[in-house]
Image (cartoon, rainbow, N blue to C red; front, side):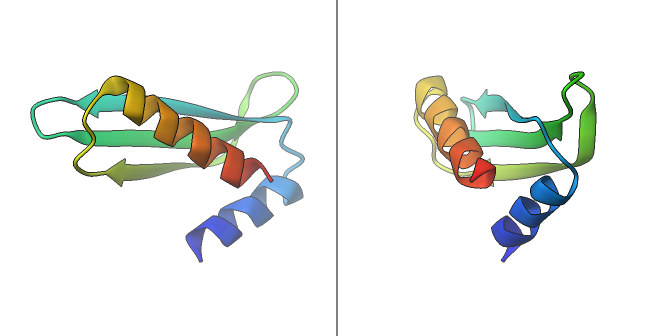
Length: 75
């Protein structure tokens, strides 16, 4: 449900691109992904959405999760 609402807000706000930031916490294995839209000038639009994935084994896996999440939310 949250994905649908976020995707709807992207189309309504004329978002030019969707950006993501990742943080992998090796000690606990958590991957924190923050996703937000930007307008054509690079300014953040709308709300930042943060997702936490548990038991992630590496920074590479965290980055892959972030890319997949960005792709899903951008469609």
